[in-house]
Amino acid sequence: MGSLLMGFYSRCGFVKDAAEVLDEITERDIVVYTSIITGYGQSYKRLAASRQLVAY
Image 1 (cartoon, helix red, strand yellow):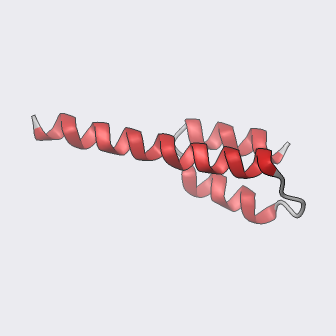
Image 2: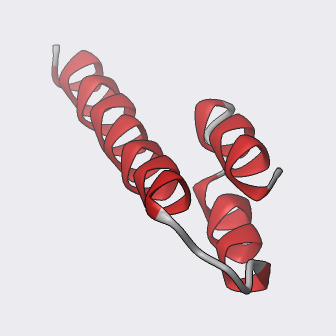
């Protein structure tokens, strides 16, 4: 359930909230870590794309 919530927050751009959910999960597995890493990656891509648009 935690990885699902983290994925939702990440897709919506709320990476800080996803990290807070990660802090609350006591039994972390590969799915949990994949969710948070993917979320950070997607957030970075959105930020980089936004910066490129502003540069034009």
